[in-house]
Length: 126
Picture 1 (cartoon, rainbow, N blue to C red):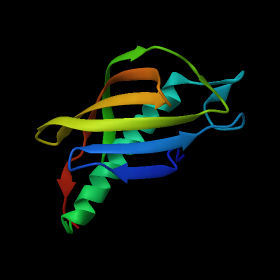
Picture 2 (picture 1 turned 180 degrees about the vertical axis):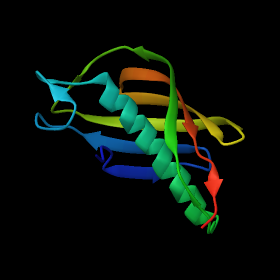
Picture 3 (picture 1 turned 60 degrees about the vertical axis):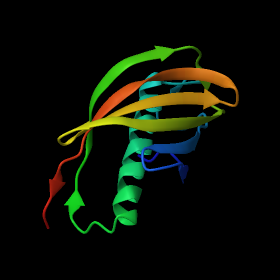
C-alpha cells in the first residue's frame, strides 16, 4: 500500500511528502483517517528519502528497511478521510543501521501530530 503521492527533498536530512485520502482509502473508517495510517505515511516518507539519497550518492548496494519503533507521537487533531496531509521528516541521528526520524504532520497551518520513529535500514550486498 502506497500512501504518499508526492515527495520533495529539502536537504540531506529533511524531506516533505503529501498524501491525499478518500473515504475508500485503506485505513479510513467512519469519516476519519486512522492514526496508524498517518504513522505509516511518515515511514514511507522516510523510506522515499533514504532511497532518493542513495540514488544521489550513486550507491549500488541494495538495502532493506522497516519501521522499527514509533516514539512518543503527540496528536493534536484528527484527519478527515477527504483531507490532504503534509508530512515533514528530519533524520536527527543515525546509530549503526538505525535512523532516528522526527516528523510533523500538518494540513495547511493546522498541526495534526508530531513524533518520532526509528527505521532499521542495514545495507546488504547484491
